[in-house]
Length: 460
Image (cartoon, rainbow, N blue to C red; front, side):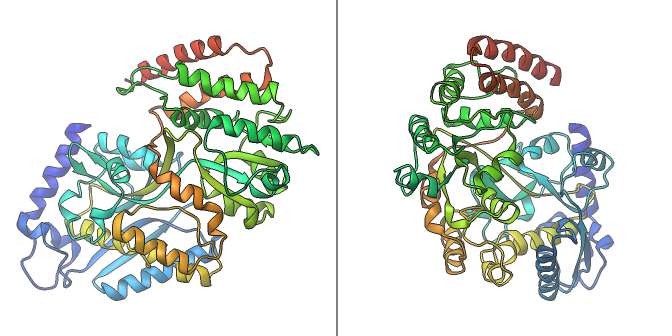
């Protein structure tokens, strides 16, 4: 696959030899000219048409209208560029994504999850955009950890759109009822355990702390908890399991104590996100691990109240699991199509006050404004984006102060390789601990380690 990647790049460079020096041209003519002309900004006289993925679906009326209005505004700024939007839900469909990539059928500018970027780069399925981003105003202020996701071999293959990191979502109302200070959420797993015990003591079916243990989501949360303890799921080279460790034992022993000694996790287990969010909305749950984007879902789908919820960074704070998305470029795209695509992404995703960060418009459109993420910038753009967000906030932003202050200090970690297969194995470990009072943590971790080592060996 590496050879295929090189072939694509060579083809792209060869095409540059024929870029027209001046005058109006079509995007097909972009394959003419010198390498120097290729690095120059897009000629405003050159007409370019690009396809862009992840237009919001018709069912998301407000978001689709915002997107379409952004396209119109962008094309007024760049009348030589035509954006052909491609809607899809989900934006990256696992059923078709791999086949479209392999068949070269992706849009010129296509949507990806952060977790898929490295494999795409390794397989030569994205264009090298390194030499095209020097004109992006806020490129140098993008979070390095997010940019690194799109880098390989010293080259850049994509740009981030949004990010999220796991933290602790808690019910401020239940904290008050349990005699806890909702402005001082727990910062360690020991404090989570102690607070969960007090909250569950309120009775009436209230659960202090809930965790997932089915649908691979138990393994997903186990990973986040491992990172928070400073542990890891696989070795740095990705070849061996690394969770049968003191940190792995600590995660499971903590859950075991809350479930069976403190009785602070309730009797119903094998929970998934669809079980936990309504528990939080109905006031029956004190805490669970979550990204900030769970809050609007709890409010909109389960009739929760924004003012009831607070956010804190991951307990223990040694690390947190991150995710998010971005865009990469079809290697069949011409240099001018790549330039046009980067201009669009800069407008839509990388500029405070515009596109996805047009908080003033989103407030008018009654979209939630004030959540602490996405936060893809550093430095002056980060401050500018935060100021605009605060000016237009329609959420109780003080409730998220602990997260906003603490999360940037936590080490961001991506999912392990072969994540879903590993999560399936770890699901069994977590569910055993939460459903079997006599579960043997040592044995569970040892057996899971053997299975995951087999998964990793087969993936090589």
